Amino acid sequence: RSIVREQLGLVYPGEKASDLETLTNSVYNHLSLTVAEVFCGNTTDLLDTVMVTPGWHHVDEALSRGKGAIVATGHIGNFELGGACLARRYPLLDVVKMQRNAPFDRHIQSMRQKLGIETVPMQHSGPKVLKHLRSGGLVSLLLDQDAGNQGMETSFLGRQASTWPGVARFSIRTGCPVIPMALIRQADGCHELKISSPLVPDGISDEREDVRGFLEAISTAVETFIWENPEQWFWVHRRWKSQMGEV
Image 1 (cartoon, rainbow, N blue to C red):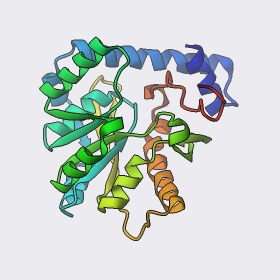
Image 2: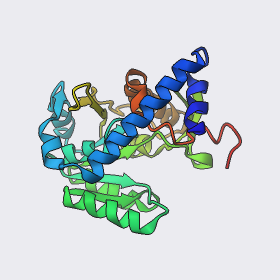
Image 3: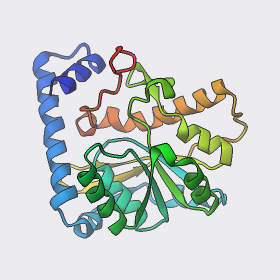
């Protein structure tokens, strides 16, 4: 909880302490609902309530280029349900970070596989991601975690952060579009899959500054979902620990 409060204070420096406390409570309320949905809910019933805005045409048009497409998202809303929603309609490869708790990691990977989500560990993802894109599939990448010395510096929620560059590099290398999206919880308990216009790497080189600029544009598109729904982001991650000298 102290991490959540600290990071909220960094992003909203002018807010009253009472308002930050209210937002902190909302963060944990959303997190508890998400945990209940993921591990105790009926996924089929939950998926039947999802509204897709503005529709699937952004994804269909991106895939029509014949190079696959990358879904750029973050730990916002019910991101596990978002993957299930995509896998219902498209061949989906989810690049994941392995959990330190091995039994829990096996459990959640099994859950994803039953929903039709293929996964690959982040540290060994390159060949499988390229193969999946070349076959015309969707690859899901989350880019809102601190990347340490392996990342590129971008602005995130108004502060400099280390961001994983894979989403930009894969897109530039293959020519595939990047589609920012997020599954957001609505006031009535249903969910809305918000799909933004694809970002295409046409004319962007693989030079470091060009990659960083494209990564910044992708990150900015994803953070829009967080600005609009701050209580639904995973504030428990130490997003800025590299810049704060933490290990």
